[in-house]
Length: 168
Image 1 (cartoon, rainbow, N blue to C red):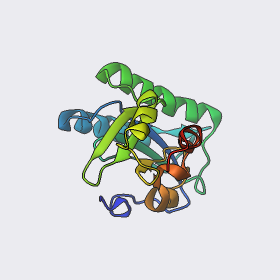
Image 2 (cartoon, rainbow, N blue to C red; image 1 turned 45 degrees about the horizontal axis):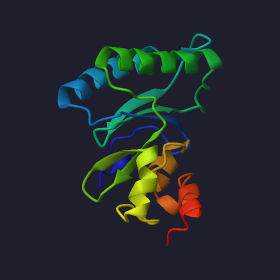
Image 3 (cartoon, one colour; image 1 turned 60 degrees about the vertical axis):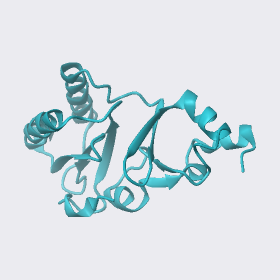
Image 4 (cartoon, helix red, strand yellow; image 1 turned 180 degrees about the horizontal axis):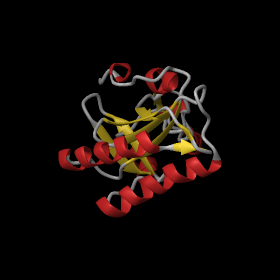
């Protein structure tokens, strides 16, 4: 497992936004995203005040934007700019970063993506178990990213599939 805290410079209370790619990002795509991300975060502002932000790519699949809101909070307009940045990356790269119907599992070696519709089948076939590790992209702070990003399926919103399946 990657040690996230070795890459992140901003404090644990910092707010995060996670964008998951619909496929593994190629090294040249990652280099482009990191370059554009550095440009974006260095010029990102709210009401004329510079925002203290970073952008990282983790596990070849996740763009994470980090903002220390104790220095300066994001405004609605600045959040809109970050979303536009991601949508522009999406358009330029052909990679979808906003499809929330793809779940990401950690296999112990790599990220495995699975469309929501296939998770139910995976549970039925025991390819996925209640304790299978899922990336919870709804977390909101660096501390959560480091400590709670990976959770057993039974502790995520996907648990409703266990209840409907009665899978043990």
